Image 1 (cartoon, helix red, strand yellow):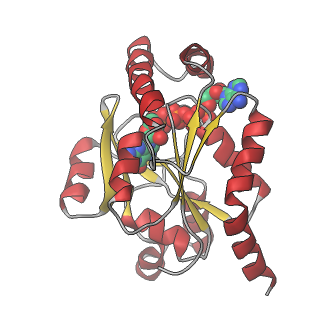
Image 2: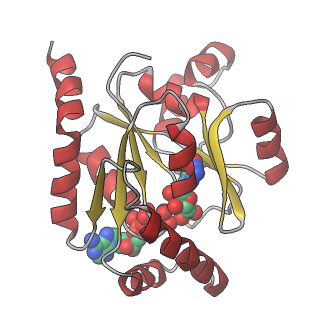
Length: 224
Ligand SMILES: Nc1ncnc2c1ncn2[C@@H]1O[C@H](COP(=O)(O)OP(=O)(O)OP(=O)(O)O)[C@@H](O)[C@H]1O
Ligand SMILES: Nc1nc2c(ncn2[C@@H]2O[C@H](COP(=O)(O)O)[C@@H](O)[C@H]2O)c(=O)[nH]1
């Protein structure tokens, strides 16, 4: 598909990926779009459900839902929350670019999630774990790969606990995955940039800088 290159944001759970991507979506309206993943984990308080698997163009043609409802439910969703059986059916029918089991739950990027964003000419942002990065490398997506890392495992633990979204068991399994991620992120050629998210403003500057070229492509397209 033509258009700006997608962006893969990866890094340990709790390192600040969502915080950074929410800043990008807010500061660059009409430039970035989030690829809404599927997951079998339970929603956290305040998280919005994208309500299943569909491509926006398909949905617009096939339902009686008002356009505004459809657009707002998709664009502001955190995940498509699904039970394992339903998600496995969609995996089996080939609806996903990649999937992974993380901390006891399935996560996956559907082909529709990426198409919906790219069809609008936006820079598609994917938030995936390091196994997802490796799977995407086997696809034809050709994204910019960004790893967001914590200053240390101790700081990461503080952030995970401070967010107060996980049980003790989940904190431990996420820290275990984080240790592996922190080692593997420096593997030559895996990421285009590794950003250590200590000071949030500095990290955001670095992120904007690596995405500058793609941002300009979309902004120039908007002007012309
Ligand atoms: N640079 C920073 N300094 C201090 N706290 C931060 C920084 N960046 C993010 N945080 C805080 O750390 C917590 C985890 O951040 P966030 O939810 O964005 O992580 P994440 O990488 O998206 O995690 P997950 O992969 O589990 O969704 C949040 O409470 C957030 O406010
Ligand atoms: N491989 C994939 N990983 C994903 C996807 N969506 C999110 N994630 C990663 O899962 C963990 C946990 O996320 P959380 O929201 O439960 O805290 C985190 O590392 C995400 O990057 C996906 O579609 N594929």
